[in-house]
Structure formats: structure tokens, C-alpha cells
Amino acid sequence: MTTSSPIVLFSSLSAKISLYEKVLQSARKFDERARVIGVDCDPDCRAASRVEEFARIPPLEEMDTETLTSYCQELKVTHVIPTRDAELACWSTKRDHLKQNGIQVMVSAQRALKTCQDKLLFSSSLKSLAVRPIATSEHLSTLPCNQFAVKERLGCASKSIGLNLDREKAMKHARSLERPIFQPMIQGSEFSAESWINSAGKCQSILLRWRSKVVDGEAHESEIFENKEWEGSMQNAFEAIPGLSGHALGQVIVDSENCLHLVEINPRLGGASPLALTAGLSSIEWFLLQSTGRENEIPVQPPLNKKLKLRKVDGEAVIS
Image 1 (tube, rainbow, N blue to C red):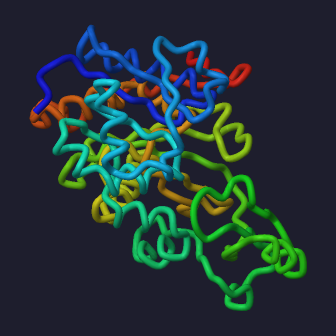
Image 2 (image 1 turned 180 degrees about the horizontal axis):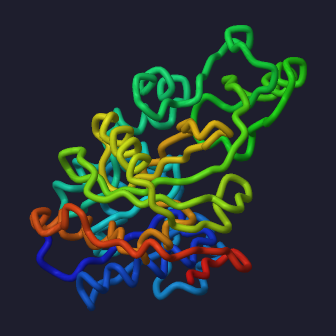
Image 3 (image 1 turned 180 degrees about the vertical axis):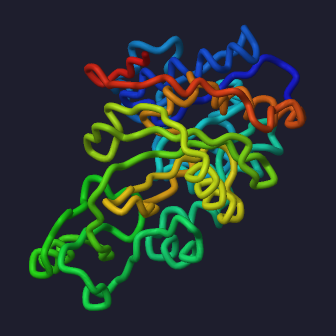
């Protein structure tokens, strides 16, 4: 159990200055002496010169469990917050060993990560929910529609995705991918649901925000709204994934008939998460409480400011 002031490792810093600053602010609400060290493989990454503390980290795939543990110990790290999809499995695999050495990681169990990152498994596992995942197949012929989205089956889809393709173009795009999957193209408005999920897998807060402007899969304009029915549906979706915990966000498309289509669930903080943290979804403070054996102090239904909106200006979040 951690008794000293937390020293948080913020991994994959890249250009995430707004998220780093909000994590630092949140950590210091928990303990005014808390430190947050931004780390990245690239010492010249955009945010490196702008954070309070920065350290270069070797690529995670080059470090075994003992090496990674030693790296964290050299920095006196007590907590880790992963921020990139591709690193989650590495931190999850090493989570128990790190915990035994006094280092807590805000990451879901490996089985939850597999469900979230494998689009075919995600679709089949959650198809009985009220808010169903978009139908997903490895075979174009099984989908009764005319326009398609084509994605990599595993990992982040935003850079390799093909959207609104007819059958011929969908097949052509699929040949450029390693493990392609096909989905019907769903048109509509998009929103994200962000949540804190406790160690028992139960949501303790849900916040919805419209994704008004999206660039490369990330919301550059987003506005909080309230819909109790949709909040309940998204709570059921989060709680349907065994091993999901910590901060998570789901992406949903609302079609012209007001039906919800679940695109994905990301078990991590996102680029627009500063909005949720500002609104009172205090995942960083709650993670620190949880890690010190005080999870019972996390409010079941915390008050949230649902009148906020975010826009990105030169890559940084402006909240009003």
C-alpha cells in the first residue's frame, strides 16, 4: 500500500500536453506534492519540453518484466497511466509483478483488452446488448449491405480504415491490410461515453459527449450532454466485459432512426478525456484512492458538470 506522495508515470506522452496537464492537476488534488513524469521513446516529441518532468523510455517491447520494473524503480514511480492502445497489453501482462514491487498500473485485465482490441471478438461477444456492436465479419459476402467500412481486425483502426466503400473498393482496400474485417457503413451522429469502472467491474460514473468534429479518429470538438437511457445502455456495455477496469470510453453512432451502434470500447484515457476529467469524472484521483486501499471513498454517483464543451486549438484542448 502506497503511503508516500505519488509519482505517476504518464506513458506515450507524444503531443498529449493537455491530457498530461489534467492528469497532473488531478494527481495534485489527491496530494499536492504528487509528481507526474511524462515518458516517451522520442526525446524530441512535441510535449517533452512543455511538461514539468520528462524522461526517455526504451520501447516497451524491448524491455522484459525485470527491466521495466527496474526502469520504474529508478524513477521512483509509484503509479503508471498508459495512454496508447498498443502498449496496454504490455502493461497488463506485467501489472501483477509491478504491483508486487509497489507500482500500480491503471490498466484492465488481459482478457478485457483482447475483447476490446479484437473487433471480430468484440462484435460477437457483445451482440446481445441493447446497444449492439456493429456487425463484423471476415467475409464480405456475409453482410447484406452495399456500403462498407474496412478495418484491421486488431488494434487501432483510424489510420488504415476504409470508409463508405462499395464491394469492389472494399475488397481492394482489404488486400492492403494484414487481417481485414468488414462492417456495414453506418451513417449518423457520433458520441463517446466515458466511465470509471471499479475493481469489481462496476461503473461508478458515466458521462456522454457528442463528437462534433473528428480528425483521424479523435474528437477535436466535443460537448457533454445527458440521456439517462443511453447512459444505462452504455453502463451495461462496459459491465459486460469481464476484467474491464479503470477509465474506459466507448464510441457510438446514432443513426437516422435514433438507434445506437457500438463502434468500440477503449480501456484507457482518450484525447478528449480532459473534458471528462474537468467535468468531475475524476479517474486519476479515484485510481490513486483505489491503489491506497480507499476505494470505498470513491462516490457511487459523483456530481458532474454537464454544461462543458471542448475544442482543440493547435492540438491543445480548450474547455469552456
